[in-house]
Amino acid sequence: MKTYTFDDPALGQITYTDSKRYLWLIAVLFPLVPFVGMGLYAWTGREWTVWVPFAGVYALVPFLDYLFPNDASNPPEQVVPQLEADRYYQILNYLTVPLHFAVLIAGAWFVANYDMSWFGLLGHSLLVGAIGGFAINIGHELGHKKSSTDRLMAKLALAVPFYGHFSIEHNAGHHTEVATPEDTASARLGENIYRFSLREIPGGIKRAWRLERERLERRGHGAWSRHNEILHSYAVSLLLYGGLLAAFGLVILPYLLIQMAFAWWQLTSANYVEHYGLKRQKDADGRYERCQPQHSWNANHLASNLVLFHLERHSDHHAYAARRYQSLRHYDDVPQLPSGYFGMFLLAYVPPLWYRVMNPKVLRLVDGDVSRANVDPNWHGRQ
Image (cartoon, rainbow, N blue to C red; front, top):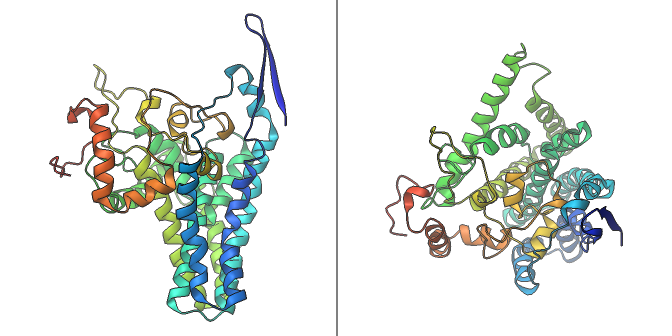
């Protein structure tokens, strides 16, 4: 296990060992889960087996989050530069990218070579789509970084679920307007996830293209030029999906569409959870205050954070977006989710249960003053 050291003039030698250093390999291997479903079906010939790993992911990870103690450990700030400079963590991110391509391609081959009913096809496609959501997560992690290699790998990862507009929309849009009524990716108090998706999905696409068009115009380029960064990832997606259709035929088209839609839904689910009801207040000049850790819901649940590269330490991410996943910090005084993302997604899919758990938490944070919350205009306080 690697130990980082720093000689502080006042505190003496500071040492830090990342106890999760090799546990992060779980996040690298997790995208391979669809091969379990394909293997079970090939072995047994029973279509229900493709649903086993899908159900397992959404049942097992919340159970493990419940079973293991929350991890609130933070690396000392003095060793963070060394931790961030350690290429090991970056390489782990990179290793997941070809695995996402492999899963999508193998999944298409599976559909073309095994005669499944709609029941089997749906289970298989949803599982691959769930893993496509993890590809967006890798695009999220790497897309925030300055390195050209990181950004290239982000574009490739986002090409798998055909979500190439994400980096522009997220970095320049969501991070600018987060936790405000203007942000299409911040859920409002009293807004269920299904109505939220009708704002978030089209709103994200529109905002991405508007921001990229404005960026290109400032540089004297047209929107449909080689300088358009959204088109870079879309081009890879078109080659990938077109190549698969050419190789396996139209029989795989439902698979491609279902897995893509469900991958997008995974991001929508994350966006819904991450800022529900939270609002930045306006300063005296009418501008929103700077985003602080308290403007995001945080979670220190061990299992889900390990498979999501610390995505759930979202409070620190939004306050300090350039930090790499291994350096993200816990804060004692920020909103805390009662479960990791997998459990919270399931809760969100049943709005009455979501409201029962989360609405009181939001109201306590604002001392009952709903004017300090990001509130759905259609909400009347009845949920």
